[in-house]
Image (cartoon, rainbow, N blue to C red):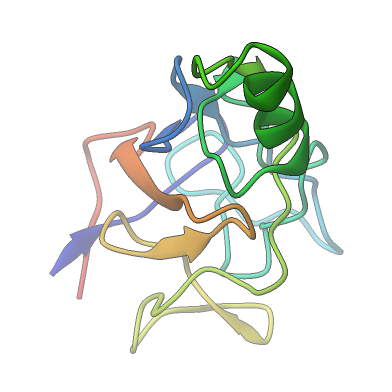
Length: 130
């Protein structure tokens, strides 16, 4: 059982130096989960939905690798720009918003640079979903 995730949820990436927030762009008729817009597994677009995590420390990120090489191997974080090729998973098995599973706080998404992005605060605390 997980918590429904809504706009303003707090996100974390292990390679980011700061938490981030989830933006939910309204799709079609308004769907609300006790106020803020409810998120689905499709709310994964970098910048539009998943805001940057401050600076990135992943050597899989070419800008970090280049800056680190230029600093003679001293890890040199660079600005985070998430690259997320696939939706959140798994989402809620029983709750749909429109045609997509609702996003719950156990869902994760993967950044191309190796970070597993997780939800550390779903943005609300009142509605339990299976």
